Image (cartoon, helix red, strand yellow):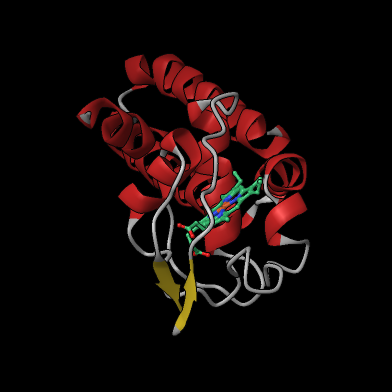
Length: 158
Ligand code: HEC
């Protein structure tokens, strides 16, 4: 958060510089500098989004951990694992499991489970994206990432 605000301040400062120097004939060079800075800022923000899972961890601890456990390994034959699960890459399944629940027999890593998971309607779209990104990138998982817009689009489907 702080880094993002700092970066935005940097862009504002550079825009101001551009404005002030634009009458002095140094436009071209300044424009390049601003473009470089903006590219840098974009890279920085992107890195931040994909490496900070602390918000998702909190959502997980509050809403998922009781069944799927802190180590993501699940519990006995009732709660399937999220750590190393071959079930995660389908984003629609992830979002729907959280917002609509999941029931019927499923096979995770070759093991069959058949206990309904109730929907968790109190979780916001932001929290949904955060918790999925946490699950996608924790316990050795490297599944990828999901945006809030993707969550919204999946929820709007049905
Ligand atoms: C009350 C217990 C409970 C809670 C809380 C819960 N789940 Fe589940 N979850 C289950 C059960 C049981 C299944 C298996 C459903 C079936 O057999 O069809 C499951 C299945 C899943 C699956 C698909 C199978 C797998 O292991 O990959 C995902 C993904 C999942 N849960 C994610 C979550 C996330 C994320 C949260 C928190 C936002 C959460 N669950 C909260 C009980 C729970």
